[in-house]
Image (cartoon, rainbow, N blue to C red; front, side):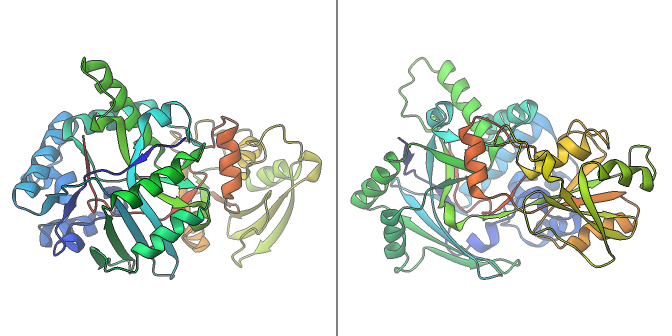
Length: 412
């Protein structure tokens, strides 16, 4: 029984939302960040990058407190307003490829996370969880929702369609040419109907935001332990999410790039691969695999297809049959000597939404020695791995949609 609740969001005013909304800080190049900080005083980047005001890099607790200060200044200057009524926020994105994403921004239960009603499929790094938990505890808000997905539901879809017939509270287009829409849903009867549909779901799944959800859970545990009058109604009992139906997720793969061949010559490397894969040199024309257990490889100016030998199709678990895990078990760990996929500096990742030419370019420039590609993971694979209590290797999926920071904010 999933508890999905309305909440009172802090939001930009209608006239400033397009100026406030920003991508995740790390996705900007330095030049892009500086341009936005120089010329847009309302960008959410001013809040998350408070050191810009003092022309220096600020980290740790000092940065967290300054983030809090910048946020309060935005509220004092009426850039943000705080809604009076608990609401669901119907959110729609139409991206530059004309793909459409419809969902609900709402509060999910930290207790549901603890009880595994909210299912996870990806490992997290403990120190990153704790750093973000400390950040949340100091700043007192979260501006980037966790992406959750649920089985397609006709009742919820019908409600969303009806709400979207009205004029949107927000409508803005980004420089990425994605158009965002937001409707505020305050009607108590409609809210109750949506809550009832979610309550009938035994599980929902994290699609993107494992560290954010884990950190929010740690915050919940800390605050609960430190509050002798804990009731379960406090805002720290929930965290902000964006829930969309499974059919609207767009799942891309991550390509792997490795800096060297672990001391092997090109010929020695190919010979070792030959015992595991059927290998075909595809020449200089870009090649992408089209089936599970088929991989692409770019090495020394040529593309190769790698087909896992069928005699090795001996999978004991749902994780064993995952292509990212197969690549790790057959090449990355035993041949290239990469054991820690999260922290080994010899490996890097490029999301599969970017062209395979990006992989080629980084190798041709000498930055990396070899690159690998695979087909995207299916939502059923994600769910099965989560249901089995297993965890995917890092960077197994690049999932859309991506919401902008600062459009809805959840305060603790």
